[in-house]
Length: 391
Image (cartoon, rainbow, N blue to C red; front, top):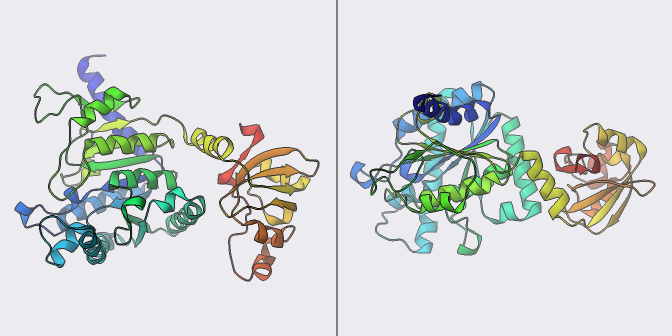
């Protein structure tokens, strides 16, 4: 293979990964979305956003589910409130509150021509670090995607403190990719990917098309590139750190140029970008987390019919449950045990122990009567269950 053929093959890696993805997260920073001071500042680049909306609509039409993580609330809100220069924490939170409405409105305006509804989700670090809140957030994402909406994610800067902040939306995007079990995270940047050195300072710096593993050497390359257009907070180092987080959850990451119109189409057509391959598969990451890292807080004893259903790939429904032992909360790990005492798996409970006991052995249609409210029937969802035969 010639050097040109090798480069073309490397360049196609990013577009191939995008075409193969069934679910992806796209991160749009404020430096991409909002006009700079030289351009007037404090406003959304509407024509650019319309071109991105068209790209996303095309991806959805091909059968890909899409989640967007967007910055820009503070940048938009500070202009609306007449704030300038460096902002105090309370001023940033006020600007975020004022800018969130404008941000959501801008995105909805861009997607209205495609008949796509925007659904805003504001997250804090607690929402992905707490198992209970993690499950709640994931269920919301799942329902929105099932309904055909486009989840629009931002950090809840209005209430977040330094202790519960992600710090930058690159990291937020990586955790959102974990949350929705995305195949791919695309970070739109003001540079076309990773270079061997800072290309502004070193004219011999070479573009890196594919990163197989994020090593200290790769992280050192990222430390040399920290572009900041005045309205964003993340540099190349934060993007590589985000790729490392996403890769640990089985999600590939692409850093691609975002300032051009139709940035996704440009990348799909073979434009320069850097693909970071995941360090583990989705299934491997899920098994490690559920079966290897979480200590079970209780047991669910099931009958033979339920055991056979689980082996066939079903979720665990209350009807097949014989006994609940232990004190656990929603989101805690529980062992799944047969009537003769054999542990056949481990999963995350969608009920706390008290409610699980109330519905044990009951048909799904009786759950609302027994609990006094309507909810999904499964005690353990199939996606949150690892059987011993799968380890």
